[in-house]
Each structure stands twice: as structure tokens, then as C-alpha cells.
Amino acid sequence: MAITDDEEFHAKFGRWEIRTPLTNIAGFERSGGYKWWKAIGIRGSLADHGLTFGSTTRQGVCVKFAEKIPALVAGPRHPGLTVTVADPDGLVAALTEHGVAG
Image (cartoon, rainbow, N blue to C red; front, side):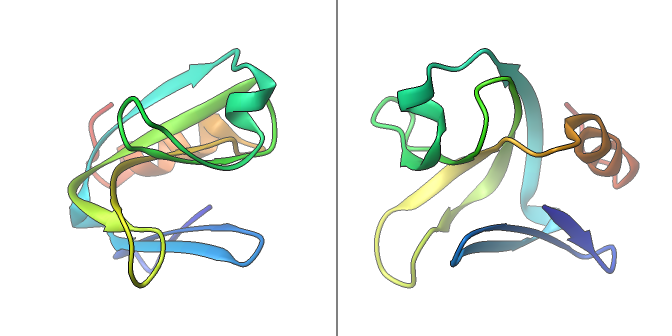
């Protein structure tokens, strides 16, 4: 995950990429203790239509978007992306530094 040039949020998982302006991020929420079948890999949620880029069950950050984003060029749009990054505290700090409230 990266925040690039103070204007863009960029998440990549294998060949999948999400890019959106930082102004499209409405908030974030820390979460964790996931069940492996709900957290590992690229997943879509039937409950909230969010997307997950997951590599661990321990801890993640759900980034919520003001305007839903596509995972593919065509297909459903997602209101949030949960990411299980190596440094969730760093992601939260970077989002907060850019004015995003948790």
C-alpha cells in the first residue's frame, strides 16, 4: 500500500491494483482476528460489498471510500477495501497525516 505524491492512494495485491485520489477516502477502520477463509487472498464481501486484499488473519485496515471504486475496468464497485499490510500503524498514520479521520 502506498500514498503517492500526496494525491493518490495505491493498493496492489499480485496483479490487482486499486488507485483512487486521497480526496475519495472517507475514513478508515482498524480490524483483525479474521477467519482465514474470509481474509486470505482477494475477496469480495456479500455483506457490505467491500473488497479485501489479504495476506494475514492478524490485523488490517478497512479504507472507506466516498465514491465506490471498481476492482476491474468493468464490474461491481466497492465502498471499501480491507488491506492486511505489514505496517498497519504506518498506514493509519499516513492516512491521518493526510487529513483522513478514522
